[in-house]
Length: 183
Image 1 (cartoon, rainbow, N blue to C red):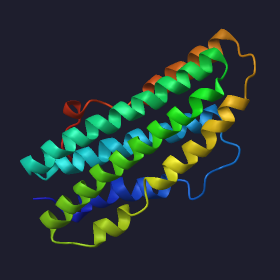
Image 2: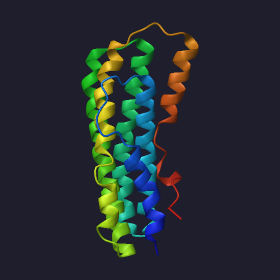
Image 3: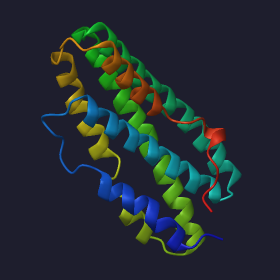
Image 4: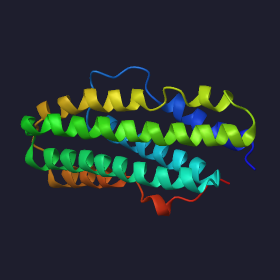
């Protein structure tokens, strides 16, 4: 059985870590930070969902997570291409569409996880309130910053390009099966 103590910390930290408003000056470091926050949120919600033990919810979550992960992978691939090629504005709508779909899928997974946790712990409403709005600000901040990355075509040295590519790769979501249930 889950306790509310095991649920509050990860979700509350993600709510606090989420930017309230999209920032106008989002660059590569901030974009990578936000993508990493989104990945962490995905892991936390899957951990929570898996800890419910509800096989049906977990199976549905696996499908939704797989679709959202594919979209997030597309965002990272698009940003990596932008980095290497110095920006191609015609790719911007596709990256933003992938980002929105990944965020929507992540929200669906987190909503299911919160619903299962609330049912299991008997604290309906508390967990939902803590998780409300945690994903949308991250997606909006990344989306508003993506356009700025296309206009930041500055010659970068090979080491800096490789560092950013490595950081983007590290922001990829883990496979569903690699995420353990919350303890």
